[in-house]
Length: 190
Length: 188
Image 1: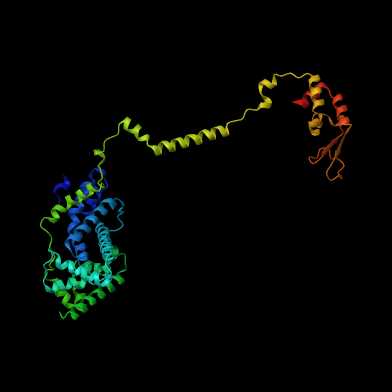
Image 2: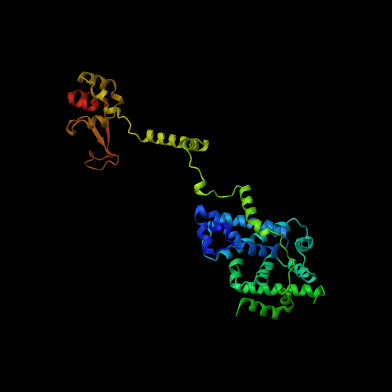
């Protein structure tokens, strides 16, 4: 069986398997194996905590499973997958924010506190400070920062995922960097 | 220039400390075997919510009895009955109506001139003068005066707007003068 042991595949190979009903499941299993780690880390940078990441990633993969036949191939497959993952993570965070009384302050503290309580985070003080600073960014700006800073994604590809112009993304990234720098300065880490 | 180099240049200009932070471990961990188990967890989730696709080969072909049973869904049966009622109503409405004036039974009935005359005399006031005039030649209308609505036209006999005025006594004379054939034509 093609998909039984194969760990990853090209987009063309995945899509050709997905287009046939008999090989659809094989194709989807291959899609998971190929993209699960990249999607996981992209979501993890946004929601920060492993358990939340797991929930969002599973929901993302289910949405992909249901909608992959509507993928028209106008963009690269991973761009389409990242777009779904980004939207799913932002929706998750926004839904959780609705239950807080003071959205801005509580959301920041909530996210930072959840990260400190996460058994799957053991970063040093500086990394914890960076995560605190990221938690204070608006969700979309955090997504832009994460794609650029951690994944080194070109702005042109980010534009396809975020649905924004390259200029707006550059401005957003620069603004995020300045906010983080200010946070570190105010915390006497600089 | 590679994108990593571009990013480093950007960070050098904006915030060099962030560049140095990138080089260390960010502290995020993943449970062991997480990625190995994710695929089966996703498929279990798909099964649980009933979203999993069934391959065509795995889908059993329904038997004739199952197919017939599928037709007996209440909603489908109601829709079918509604369409049937509409079709029957349309057929009844548009079918040609029986023409009783030319029915074979009436065509076989024979009327004698005497019967016709008695009938005409009894129903004289019920008859339309134009009906009588229509079966008579124009020159046989001595008691009939034609009154056009406007009154100025010299030849108004053929005008559709013309009205006929016949006195009852003239009508009786007129009917007596009619031949049997004319009376028969008048009645049919």
